[in-house]
Amino acid sequence: MANIQFDEEKQNKDLEDLRQKEEEELVQLLAEAKYQLPYINLMSVGVDNEALRVITEKEARDLKVAPFRLAGKNLFIAVRAPKEDLISKLTELAERKGLVVSFYMVSEASLNKVWERYAEISMAESETAGTLEISSEILSQTAEKISKMQDIDVLVKELSDQNQVHKVSRILEIVIAGAISIGASDIHIEAEKEAGKIRLRLDGVLHDIMVLDSSLYHLINSRIKLLSGMKLISNRAQDGRFSINEKDVEISIRTSLIPGAYGESIVMRILDPRSIRVKLEDIGIEPFLFSIIETEIAKPNGMILVTGPTGSGKTTTLYAFLNRIYSEEVKIITIEDPIEYHLPGVTQTQTDGTKYTFLEGLRSALRQDPDIVMVGEIRDAETAKIAVESALTGHMVFSTLHTNNAAGVIPRLIDLDVNPKIMVSALSLSLAQRLVRKLCKECKKEKEITEEEKKELGVVLESIKAEGKDLSKYNIDPNAPFKIFTAVGCDKCNMTGYKGRMGIFEAIKTNEEIEKIIPENPSEREIKKTARNQGILTMRQDGIVKILNGVTSIDEVKSVVDLLEE
Image 1 (spheres, rainbow, N blue to C red):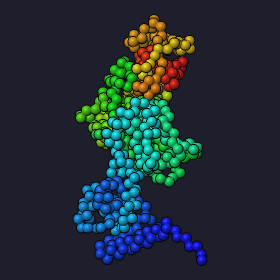
Image 2 (tube, rainbow, N blue to C red; image 1 turned 180 degrees about the vertical axis):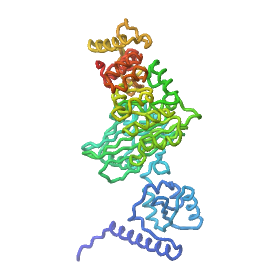
Image 3 (cartoon, rainbow, N blue to C red; image 1 turned 135 degrees about the vertical axis):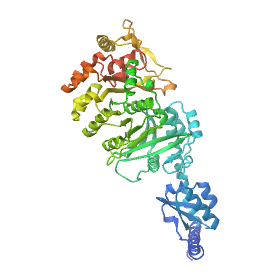
Image 4 (cartoon, rainbow, N blue to C red; image 1 turned 45 degrees about the vertical axis):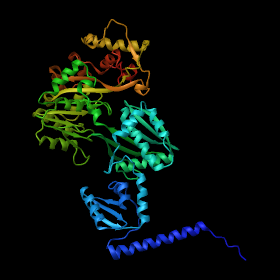
């Protein structure tokens, strides 16, 4: 007699499949015959995360419904028992959110499939697409546990590995909340050969935070794409954004993604409106230059141009100008690329790179009869000409220009075909700046000065004296020995030795002497020579003053300015 083996596991699976098939057939029959609703089997249908955000998991389970698709304003909801009061309640809920709802009948298996997808939605995520709601409780709890960057890695390592999907959301919460609490400006998530790396940019410098295994990196990558509204599968660079609501403050996260050799590199820039509320007097401008700027920005017309490389704080300076002179009596319009921070009482517009350019934006803004116009950047001849003409016709114009120093503004405008004779009357002030980190007050220490450093400081101090500038105005005794400080590192400054940043500046005022040489198409050297008697420190001189006052280190200043360049 043949040996017959009974496979109980297979038998049970076959029975379950049969029951599932019968349930699907019954639901289909009831949908068509009794309820006149379309039937759908969600076991083979994709579910939109955006739809899940419309109805919370608790509501969905309590009502035995499942939102599974959101197309524009059309919301598709699966129901198990379409009672009249349930349909009315869901319709009203959708209408309150500006959505049109369509209902489908489904089996219990289909509902369970959708409910399981809620695990991919973080417990701290908003119901609004594109918004990650990290509650004030989570932020404050995270901030209490994080005193330095290394604590972020510690918190992540404490997470349980039981639910990988939920772990991804929690890691993002910890990293983003931690970055905000310590004041980081960027989060970098980079693919390596067999892993992923998370780094934070603090005071302009990148620091390693943690290494992720490859599978976790890919899950986080996908999670950020979904949040930022990016395509999940793409071999091209993408940009997106989402926001975080912390109490009454909306923090925007601007996301940039580029493909690399081992995977995609994601940078999330944190745009915290609280970080831009910097007063003009707090950004590091020395008193004499501050008095000049204060006078110039208060004038009814003119043009002030700020120059410097990307990341040198030009936008912060322009916003500080606007905040300083804002009142309800003036109309201020900005043309930005993109709008990074929202300023109350200011009409802000954003270029789109195609039709609404800086040029078109400036033309449109002038039709609104503004008192003050801020143009994000002057990039071409036509924008430069209209900006100059605007300054001549009763408007105050603020903008940025890509030159290395303040003396480069005039030659650059001439290169952009601005008439030198008109420029004389329009350009009020050319300002150049760089950012340096400030030494941590808690742990900085005096260092022994080297012969090379002594020579560098001496050369710059001699130039200050030769130009008739009084060193005592900058709290410097020219006869005392040099006293400089260096970074150490403590818990207060994330072990970096630095806390916060400030600008080092130089400026050239368009006075009578400068006006005389502009029509002659002067070189940068000629402009610098003519401007020396204005009494304004050059960038290298301003940097030395801040070094000798113990505000920053000589290494920081040398990283952005050549101390031996005249």
